[in-house]
Length: 294
Image (cartoon, rainbow, N blue to C red; front, side):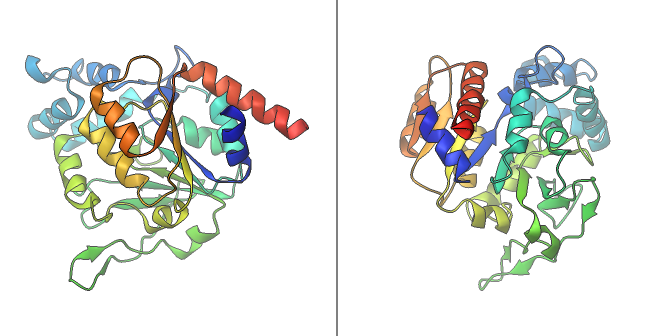
């Protein structure tokens, strides 16, 4: 299976979908790499009712409601402010210039740090309606400067439809898509209950998903790394982002699965690889280097 995945990578047919677990690959110096770790950092700096102290989206909503959105944004930025270097796997992903799309579904900056050696890529991030009303995403160049968005258009029913990507982004060799936002370059975070409600009311009709992502994903295989699908939010985002892609995908998930995870993988034709993320990424990169040397 590793050989099959490596071949798909070399052909540019894979869309790596990097979840929170990938953030932990650098080791102890890494930013929070689990929702449970992140929420503990948030509630350590803000008083939150005990019953929601372990729920990231609910705790974030409480902070936003009672301490202001700016407080939540500052706490999130602080949690991901450490100067951690990317892992070897981050560097390997960034070196795969044949990949047209990389999905990074967490809030750290390790992916963009790894891409810093290249100039032929760009970034599109999910943003909140509370801070960017009318926009679902922001586009950024490799230096962090923002690309002005085109105006939203309306479809035949009068409803908002996704705006076309800014013209200059069409020349990017690799598009990094961060559906939840990120600490870099502008501290955009999709994290509170209200943030998710805004997106989930539209995501079934694909409005929040950039048209470039919708185009690139067609016929491609997703490889989920560092992801779990135990809750509805995780499953909804993955399902909608991989929509209308190929009928063959992989997910590296070690250990026991929940019933909801088993159902999700079965419904989405995702082959589960029961291995540790560290072991799998090491095997993937080593097999890739060996195949390139043949």
